[in-house]
Image (cartoon, rainbow, N blue to C red; front, side, top):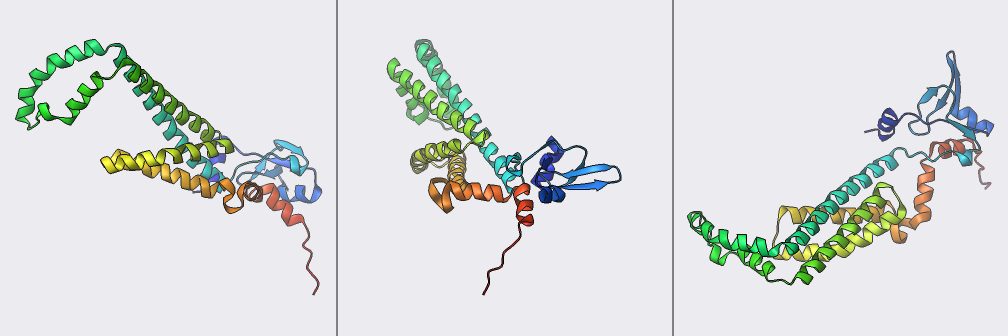
Length: 257
């Protein structure tokens, strides 16, 4: 997939006229129908006036190629974080509502359980020794303050997920660091949960989180990996069309033997 062409088809081309004559000539061509300028994203010649002009070092940074693919992956993780954060917010609201109406819910539960026992026996489910029922009774025995703190903890967790989502969606470096640290801190808990019971949801969540941590560490060169931020920024500049064409206009000096 050509991410540059795909993005230009969706958002339009971006052209720029540098002041430097040699570089200007490499980005401009005259045609019978008028002048055309190379798009800084996909490299296609586009007819019409350039969108901007000035010194080459003031040209806008336009994501292209692999950087666009990386942005798509980052925003995929951001959407996953938004969905997870909203689900946790809903769970926190449910705990708060349960705490406020525990008495009425418990009375309904105590009334309905005896009625469900005959049906449960027909399908081979012993409600008197069910772990699900025992867990529900345990929740009813919790103090209101405990439930309130649990709801507050869920809200704090949801906030972390949503902050991650914002940082990743905006492609901010602080968001990448925040996502790595926050996600890595939660991995031991997810691994411990798998030792208790293996489910497709838990395995999928662990795979996504490990993939996010590894991807960010390696591709974004966080914590000094693969040269750190300087190497990452140099790599970004090296993929810029302006930088590529500017390097082509610089004469190479051969070392004398």
